[in-house]
Image (cartoon, rainbow, N blue to C red; front, side, top):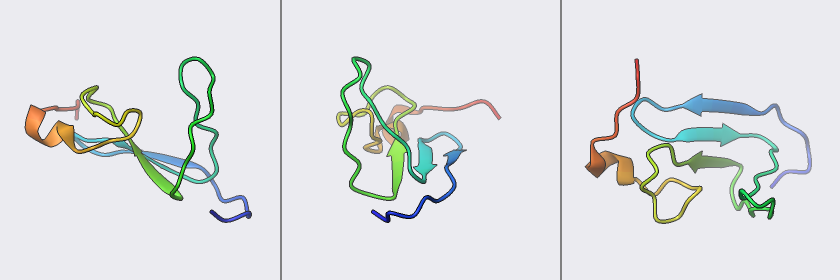
Length: 68
């Protein structure tokens, strides 16, 4: 990852994950740091991912829908 600070943005994909771009500190509910291997990460919103907090595409087959 870049050492330069880029603006943080969070984009809610329709019927899909949250795309997080920029330098953010991800942590588990108990405060343990979660390693990021990419500049942009997709975070699960449907609750069905097997690799939480990251998205694994489970929303596609589950019928997960978000409000418009």
